Image 1 (cartoon, rainbow, N blue to C red):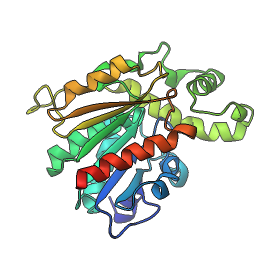
Image 2 (image 1 turned 30 degrees about the horizontal axis):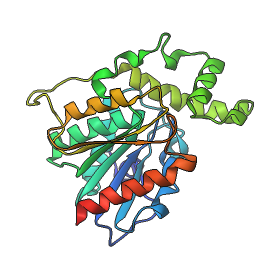
Image 3 (image 1 turned 45 degrees about the vertical axis):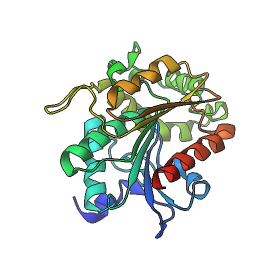
Image 4 (image 1 turned 60 degrees about the vertical axis):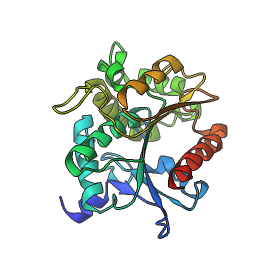
Amino acid sequence: MSSSALEKWVACRRVKADASIRLFCAAWAGGSASSFNKWTSKLPEAVELHALELPGRMRRSKEDSLTSVSAIVEGVAQALVTMGLLDKPFALFGHSFGSLVMFELARKLKEDAGKIPVYLIVSGCCPPDMCVGGGSSPPISQLPRDALVDHLIGLGGMPEELRDQTELVDYFLPPIRADYTAYEGYRYELRPGDDSRPITCPIICLGGEEDGRAPRSDLERWSSLTAAEFRLQMFGGGHFFLQGEGEQAVLTFLGDILTEKLR
């Protein structure tokens, strides 16, 4: 893969020469690097944010979307290692579908490059051993257009006012379907050399108090996947508790734990 092709995988709105830690972020199904545009200016100066940009969206909209978690992780891992972005402490953050991507990325980076994040931060997502076929019948990826739009609006992932903006909605739906296909096809497996706790760094789990998709009881099960510390932090709100009024509370928490790690 050429250097220009590798650079497409991550976006950094502001390089911070004096940053002490990098935060790599993966969005929810259909999300893009732009989902984190506001975060850079709201995080401490010590934190340099890089957001994943998957094929099929935004500046990569002409590329075919990927439909497997393993293919996504392979591309991201190659980019981070080859571009030298793991030369200082780093943390991985993912919300919803992005949590699965970052969980598998943490495993991949350890296995292939010997790199371990200071934190794996998962958000709004049940642990991988609970992700079996997506849990919906029919699969969300195969829902008719209008039913899929209804699902996204009900989840809080699409504003109601976009429903009638046909051209815009149809632009976003293909990568959303692709990500749901990847989620539905994902199977958690222990690999040779793994013990029952494949993550060796602390796992920080964030959740919304009113998120029926990822309730507290399920989020607590992430603790069984790390040999290190586990912490669960709940916030007010539903599945997208990290947006709108809840955004600042989440960013304050992230800023605190990341800078605390550097002391």
